[in-house]
Length: 134
Image (cartoon, rainbow, N blue to C red):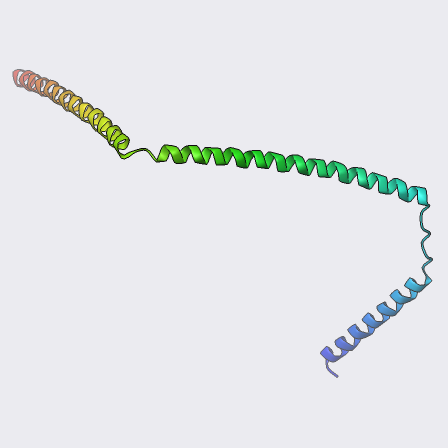
């Protein structure tokens, strides 16, 4: 016989033995005594009070979520109203921005010319000073 067959027979034997031992102890076990009625009523009362408090917590959570949904709905309506600006209003805002950018670019151009002129004059001065030294 091969090792696989022997190990399979051993596994089946051990499993059967464990099952028989489990059944034996299950039958030998004493039946549990039921608790008295007043103990069961007290446990039931505790369970009901816990259930009541949990229900109250769940209701509060549902109310908070409902309030959040209402707020989000109002915010959505507000942003939809803002996003539906009329075409003339959008054009006016665009023209205003173009004017601001145009003014800034003109100012920037003149400032650049002035800075370049200053550096030009400094370069001429430096060239003249170097030519006098050499």
